[in-house]
Length: 110
Length: 146
Image 1 (cartoon, rainbow over the protein chains, first blue to last red):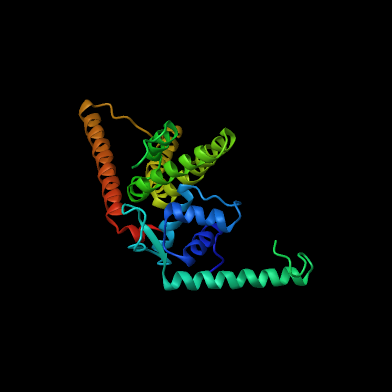
Image 2 (cartoon, rainbow over the protein chains, first blue to last red; image 1 turned 30 degrees about the vertical axis):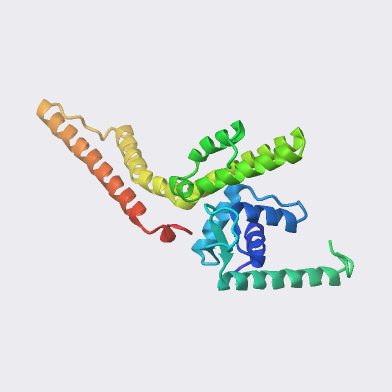
């Protein structure tokens, strides 16, 4: 599998911690990027549709204490988690290479 | 209790008609609900500039994703493929007419036969297009995705 698009990576990462509904994913992406990335509904659900088509994400029953019975929840599949790990490792290698070329100082976070 | 939708949400709900029907059926309700919640949150906690930015972002998202979703249905490609035989036929006809090869029958009976042949051709094209569309949309959704 080639590199994931930013939207796909953000959605997979948002689902890595917990099962979430669409709006929950949007809020988690906003949180995990410090407010930099706001996924619109068209982008989010188009991405979810493709991820479900590729069996990287599936619909789930949702957590036991789900806040809204009518909402649809999504979770990572085993291959989704694997794709996320592979992409995170690829990005880690890129960051290491950038550090080695002093593009970003060692120990910096951003 | 669910709050009544504001005018922005109503407009968004109407604009969802621009998406392909299958996509709208699958995610339309969720999309409207998400936009309603997000708009309520943005109105409650931010100023009018942030609310305007929110709606501009939603409009931008639609502008980007509506053509994308239509492309994913394969319909534009199908329309192009369907139009090719017709365009080729018209091209050949124009060439024939330019070279003076097109001979219109002088006899009324011959003209009627020619008109009948053209009519049958058009009907056959329509039947072929209907069969192609039916076969395309009868396929399982997953095999239509790229």
